[in-house]
Image: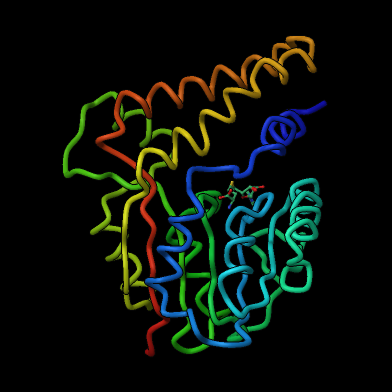
Length: 251
Ligand code: SAH
């Protein structure tokens, strides 16, 4: 079993594969101005097993294409959509976010929670823009510094893990530079990380290790996750995910 299979195994039973909450998705929906519109077309990019796709499908009159490059996660999304009687509104689609097979100017909204970092925020918002209809909405969550300065240890951790980490003002400037009008921002609250993501994952650690007979590769994955959790617990005042809402601007 290779590392990717191990990572799938650790995360597939999670209600989400990154920090977030149904309330945060609803808060972003409220800021998006999409509520009350009909026949919306939305792509949820890096949808995982469907945390946000399920909320979007139940809150909006919309069809959601759930895009991920891992078929096991999409299979789980299919099952969850069936369970919630939302199958008609959600189509799982196996694609990579760096080469999307979607028509230009076809989307009312692009949604992406905890996933755009895989290609980098700036590349993502720039390359996805043509897919939006004029005035279409971009809703993305992205790791963000909450303060202007921070301790060296957390600075070093994140700048080596993800050099594009920046403050909200810098992310908003990037959105403007890439042809968007920012319309909203809020940081995710600590329970989005701890209760909703890290704690359920930690509860899966022992079963995961037992299933893989304490294989070194499995132990390394757990150690890396535990290190990330420790960094979060010690430095949560200094970083979170920021949720950014923006509209495709004319130019
Ligand atoms: N949005 C979900 C999942 C976040 S985890 C949630 O909030 O729970 C990031 C997701 O991005 C994973 O499901 C991973 O499989 C997916 N991903 C990573 N790189 C990708 C790529 N290049 N193309 C498509 N999906 C990708």
